[in-house]
Amino acid sequence: MANLVTEIADTASAHPDTTALHYDGQEISYQEFWGQVGQFAAGLQAAGIEPGDRVGIYLPNLPQFVVAFHGTLRAGGIVVPINPQYKTREISHLLGDSRAKVVVTIGDLVPFVSEVQDGTDVEEIVAIGGHDDATAFREFLAAGAPDIVDRDDDDVAVQPYTSGTTGQPKGVLLTHENLHSNAEMAASLVPDGVRTDDKALGVLPLFHIYGMTVVMNATLFSGGAYYPLPSWDAQQAMELLAAEDLTIMHGVPAMYNDVINQPNAEEFDFSSVRLCGVGGSGIPVEVLRRFEELYPTKIYEGYGLTETSPVTHFNSPEKGRRVGSIGKTLPGVDSRVVDADFEEIAPVEEGPVDEDEVDLDEITGELVISGANVMQGYYGLPDANEDAFTHADGKRWFHTGDIGYHDEDGFYYVVDREKHMIVSGGYNIYPREVEELLFEHPDIAEAAVVGIPDERRGETVKAFVVETPDADLTADEVREYCLERLAEYKHPREVAFVDELPRTTTGKVQKFELREADE
Image (cartoon, rainbow, N blue to C red; front, top):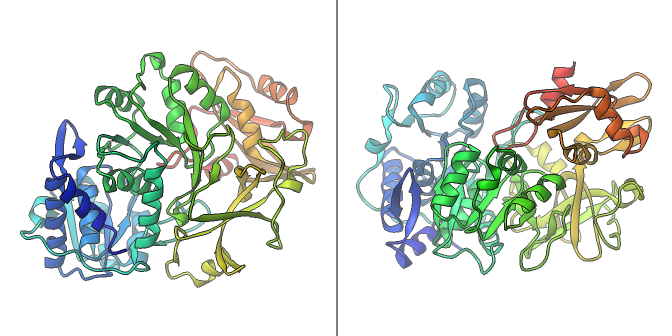
């Protein structure tokens, strides 16, 4: 395999007139797109960027992100995607750590880059919309069509950063082989594979590996059309999906929850959609059930991490689905559930199990992953790399930090994050179990559960609840609801009502913020 951008070149050659990008009513063909990729690569070379140099892309989902991403690869560079919601403090770490030499952004974000530029290796800022401290994106594009720079399979292609919810974000070194193999696998998750007549909703942020690999690259490598949206708005996304007869939608659980909670949810048209995928975190079963009652399509849950490029497991329209499962291990990927001594834990006969009738501590362990999709390592962090991997049976296993189990049919189930587990009076409590129950309450739109200090038990459970419109719950009612359905030690002893839950751009609840707010 060569530079992974070769896939775009092959697609452009085979389907020059097919739509590659569709944005704000404008269509860009593969021939036009590949030409712009070449112009951006030429601009990088004119700016002195050499193979292995890093280019920061600090943009929302715009066509220019897609052009800059593949143009950087064409020039042999390494893409450093940056969350466009980040401000000075956050980008200071990412730019300083990555040593990016060029940053592509929008005019409004240029001041954040300029403020930290002196302490970084950034030599040039390129801005969409223009700014006095930056080169306009159109002016940066250069004439010519440079050859694709050869890269080896194990050369780094993209360096995304972890979300940093437990410390400073870490740079994840993803190679051309990592991303190429996973994009191919992601394309195969759609029945019969992604086709040239497929149209993918591009609302998952491109700075995040899920949107980057599973949506953008899987679509473009296969000749489909990618429809980027700069931000998530349920009404806007559903209108676009219906108007353009989009066929592929991937989202995080919060997005699907937003859809079913819209006042006109029953009017949305999903008849054109061939696949709805969900990842990023576990989708509450109740959200999935409500969605499938409203629309003639199923949601297929998968699993992955930035460090695994990302997808490792998926429920499949062709190979079956188990509600509550993250699916089966994908071809080319190995996974195990192991104990603290790295011994494999035996599967249960069939999942999902009734968590009130089994001892989860006996059937669960940490999920570990091996395969061509697993990252090279964390950038410049040898201690973190030593902790992240175990070598066993001739393979290199990545520790996900997720607790789960598997069954004899090959389906895997994630119970919770290791760091989220609550230990109360010697009992292990998995927040997701309590959250699932709360989602079933008709007056609760969203919920998150965390552990808080307790003098007698060590920790106890606190629930943060977002009510549905016109609901008028009390904390006692929520506690009683849980007490009737859960073991006594699992019920939330404290309940807080909030207008919304703090989330990352990719929809994950930032539980550390909930804990900090409680202190």
